[in-house]
Image (cartoon, rainbow, N blue to C red; front, side, top):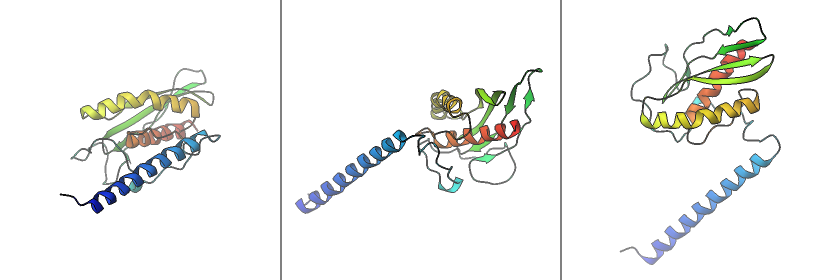
Length: 177
């Protein structure tokens, strides 16, 4: 039997947690409504400080690249390729490994404008990873086309995939100049 004093304590803790959650949501809404979006332009966090809601990582390390580095790991870069003599060119970003699998994107530019982004690789090893990848790919593409750079918002529930997508995109954009 739980004493009344313990029940009151549990009630206070639950109430405090609920209020904290509501305040956090309101802060996010406020920041997103402010001009250019303070959250979208926030600097990227280092690999050691990342958190995400994606499913548990693979138990084996990927063989996509050398060295033992924390996720995401840039595993190599491929050179960009120009398509014809027009000013439209496609650049392929590096494969970026994270705890859920490889991510790689290709970006098409016409002049200095990003006209298309395609995910060449997204995590699909586990059913949940594949489901997340299918849901976030169009969101990330839309973010890039709107932002016209690699400073995109992280999709909630797909933090590692979002950040790896941005890293691969940044590599492709570096090739473009």
